[in-house]
Length: 246
Image 1: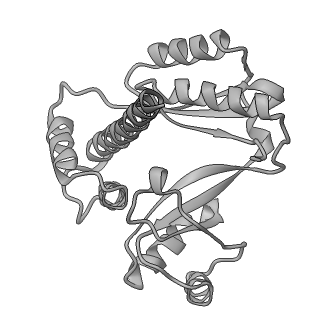
Image 2: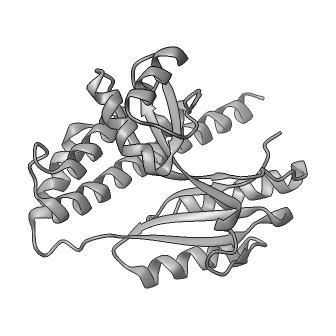
C-alpha cells in the first residue's frame, strides 16, 4: 500500500515538473517570436508586453523571459512558426494540436508518429476545426464579479457574448482568479479594457467546441493518454478536444 502511494506521489510530482517545463518552454518560444518581430523593449513592443503578462499569470520566473530575450537578439537563434495539426481520436473525437516550432518537418513527423501509434488518425486540414469556434480567452489574476466584468466589456465595445468561468490552476497558474471568454475579434479590446481597469491579465486565441461529443469512459481515458503523449513533445504547446467530459 505504501509502495503504491509512493509511486502515485512520484507520478504526480513528475506531471507537475512536466507542466512547469512546458509553461517555461512555451513562454520562452513566445518571447523569441515577439522580440524578433518587434524588438526587446516591451514599452513599444506590445507583443512582448503581452507575453510578459502571460508569463506573470503563469508564474513563470522573470529569468526565463530575460534569458530568452537575450537569445532572440542573437541572429543565430532560429525563429518559431505557429503550426496547427488536426486528428481524430478514439470515439471520433476531434483533436487540434497547436505547435510552436523551429523545425516544421520534425514537428509534423513526431505528431504523426504519436497519432498513428496510439490508435488515432491524422485528419485533413479543416476537417476537425470546423467543429470548433475561435474565441478569445483571458486569464485574470484578480477576482471580479460578473456585473463589473459586463460593464468593462460593454465599455470596450464588446458586441458578442462574454462568459466567466473558473480557471484551471495547473494550466492557468495559481494566481489566476477568473477566465473570460470573448469573441475572437474582441479579445484585444476586452483585454485592453481589463488592463486599463487595473486587472493583471493575459490573453490568447483558443478553439472552443461547438457541440461537445459524448464518449465512453474507455475512449475518454484513451484520448487523454494520447493528449498526454502529444503534450510531452517539445514542439507541442497545447492540444484541444471536443469531448464532453464526464
